[in-house]
Length: 122
Image (cartoon, rainbow, N blue to C red; front, side):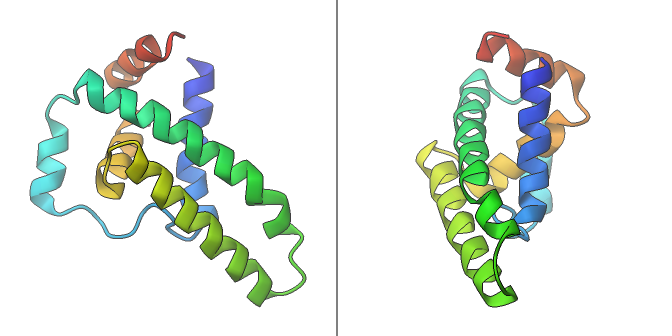
């Protein structure tokens, strides 16, 4: 469970690292209402997959971002990481809105977190 919480925290922190890398636009109110309903095991499995990829991409670029010589270079690194994260989420079968909504919900919904842990084999 701790691993997934770290992963979820990393994903949310990553959104800050990339200035909204995966958080393009806030979900529409009707989409938020949709996710207040039960999240399927299939969606959670997609989130587990995407989260793993997003975390790997974050690790891949974190040092280069922190050690960038200037703001322009840092922005280039950030944009490259951001695009890779968006691509990873899309390849998992989720929209960026779906991914962000579920990851945010994992922070406060213990039941959802527990189901995700079960799916991840933790």
